[in-house]
Image (cartoon, rainbow, N blue to C red):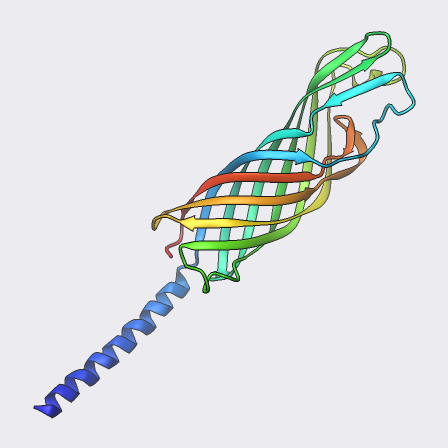
Length: 225
């Protein structure tokens, strides 16, 4: 009887080991992947001077903007992943005036295309469903301004009248946030990051469009956890 119980116990133990090993191998194959959208606010910290310094022309563009972004994450292992972000930052209305009451008005938008690494070093200490993270990397940023009406007289900014311009350059970004996996297919995310966006030429009245971004969003899990 004792021998029978011992044999059954040994078979059960071996089966458990084999099952656990297969489960680990299956989990290795199931790389965590998820994609989603985040929306929030962007606040510029630029302090560069106006392109009209010393001229009788003033510019007006807000420092706060609405932002939205699509993100995709692919984790090589549980705590290190690759991230791609496609964003849009609306700089809102822009307006230029000179002392002769001539006026030029329009709008501007910033489009960051970012890529980088995402790290979740505290995952094993906190919870697999509640993951703080840090991330950062490089970006290609395009800023586009569209002028919708008006015209400035003289030489100050006449080339901008009723025109569309764009500038592009490389930048960097870094930040962090928290993700909560509320189900096997849905995660909620909150994110904070700084983006460095600087150009050699003025666009929408500035060379420096750097700032802080706070967003909230939801993601859909593509690879099983």
